[in-house]
Length: 557
Image 1 (cartoon, one colour):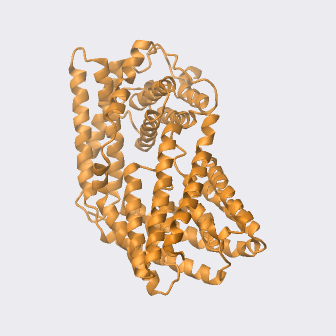
Image 2 (cartoon, helix red, strand yellow; image 1 turned 45 degrees about the vertical axis):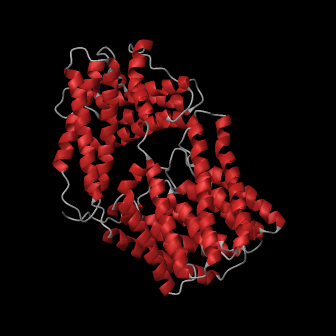
């Protein structure tokens, strides 16, 4: 099959910032500031490289409900300090740079697949790989390892408290925001639908539908991991309205969807849909599918790790070869090349290319920022700490616009951290970072091309089968004279989730190289048929708006 195009301009285009960009930005500043200022006061800023391992855990899990966030952050802290411990122990046993690079590559591969399998979310494995790889080249003895790991654990506990603190003021904030985002995108899709619901093309904007469906699916995952039955059920009712807008957009009211979204973003009481459908009995039927999905749970971790084997091999091979190439060029910090390679690997080769371009552009711009900041940071160590805090904030404020823009702040911060123990030769730092960036990106991308992922086609086949089976199940219920409302709702929820998975799997497979031709026509046919069945299911359930409920914009006309 023809190879995908490798674009340049689109890769660097800036997006809108994340709705919650300020949350990880502020959290990491607070989490990093206290340990660093304490160490500065004690005259031991050289130990900040260990506390940073725990502090950077504050970047994770900001989109999760607080009960789930508590668990995820605890695992992140343990994973971060575990990687740090392995690296420090390895460094204490050998001075061989080749062995240390090999250990770093294996750690990076393990971190990559675990983050992907658990869907940890940004910044995923990159921060974990940065900490463990850099720690491999820190001087130290085996006897110092427990103390250094304890510092990381202490800073990680502080980061956990920082990330959990907002829950005292707004305990349901994450799930409210996720639901509001889903409603907003569903309203945007409903806006674009033709007014005649019987048109031959009821879904003329597949990209907006894909984005809305993904947002609704993500919101369901967030809400289902939340505690508090009353709040959760109220949000589930609203998500059902968002799903209805996807299935029957011409019969939905985008103005009302946006109004609910606005109410959710504040601290006002949870909105309750006010149409004729909302008696308690029907609510129970609507929520039956969500309850069934919650009861089933996720697949075992071992099953989720299996399809990621090619990504693990890519990461291990690419990181190892990048580190070896850096060593061959005489670079003193081969872990920079290793981390560059680790940061590249995405769902397919095309996305990996995009990340490689973003990484190179961001790092090259970042070394220029570092060169400009070095004179300021050497005035006093207080200035060094404050500049690093500002770069931490800037990285999180900008990275949601585009990865390369965030890297403009991440790169000088990583370079300045090396000066916590003692000042470095800035010219050599810049040279080595540029070389390692180019080597890591080039070697890492070559490894991505060399290690094929033929399982992407198999996964697409499985996703297609899942959609077709879910559609058949819903169609059989529709054909029955009196299907059980709970069974019909469960079938609709299952079909909607299968469609989201099919679209994500198809996009990942389309960007992969060196595989058999994809069944594109079968994918399109399956999606169209599933969309029609979803719409029929919604109408059979009576979830769509009654004809008397005209869309607000039509009334104004």
